[in-house]
Amino acid sequence: MINLEGKEVAMAHREKIKREIEEQGIEAGLAVILVGDDPASKSYVASKEKACREAGIRSIVFQLKKETSEEEVLKKIEELNLDASITGILVQIPLPDHIDENRVVEKIDPWKDVDGLHPFNFGKLFMGNSVVEPCTPKGIIHVLDHYKIDLAGKNAVVLGRSNIVGKPIAALLLQRNATVTICHSKTKNLKELSLSADILVAAIGKPLFVTAEMVKEGAVVIDVGINRIEDKTKLSGYRVVGDVDFESVSRKASAITPVPGGVGLLTIAMLLDNTLTLARIQQAKAA
Ligand code: GUN
Image (tube, rainbow, N blue to C red; front, side, top):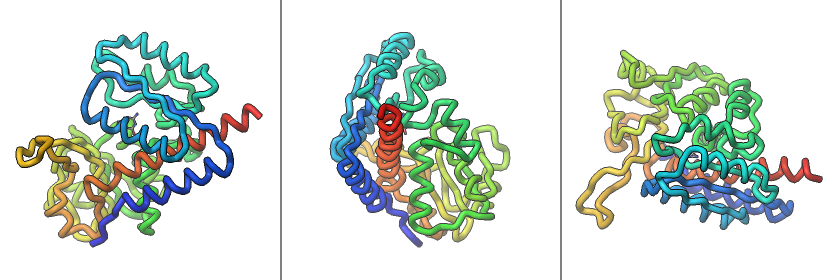
């Protein structure tokens, strides 16, 4: 069984980006908007900020109150769209219920959309002509490529249909000639379908949902979940687990990503990658 360690792959990629930024004199500035005080989101944003700093990307975090109106968020985005020193904009998801995620994403200048979630970028992704790809799906493909896992003709089953992971990873797997099935909360024969998977991507946000009896012998399992579950033996009072029951599934899988230390680290590396790509494009346009 191969442990698809994200850490080494992510760190090597971050070093490469840092070198390119230095050598090519790229001036990249990432603005991150965080609405509310969800502890997990705050911790992700802090990691993104640190990674930017280490790579030589300026980053500014706008921490807005939970009650901030949709109009105010849209206004902030408009301001950042017009600011030439900002080359990338990221709005941390999830947003509070009173804010429409689609309206927010559509407001971002597509050439500053480091998440690749604007309809322009999402459309190009599905056409196989992407500029930037959503960070987590891009990270998954990166780790599969690193470990030389061939996707052509394989049955890939994606659990979850979110815009941020499920739909875009399906598009990328399809582009690599996998036969892709997307399962979701209304899927009837989920266990049967997941058992047919050569490549199984779990992105449903349910702790330890995927158990050994849902996994085919020799399957490659990608665990996108980052769930906090109560653990009184820990100082923090919680521990982080994936959507996959690693202990039982790792005995059947031929390869599996761990949580933590798997896909999460690659998401951040790909965010830097997208930020560099868009900064380069803007620099070339301004020249
Ligand atoms: N929330 C969880 N992952 C992500 C991500 O990759 N981008 C954004 N904007 N929000 C997230």
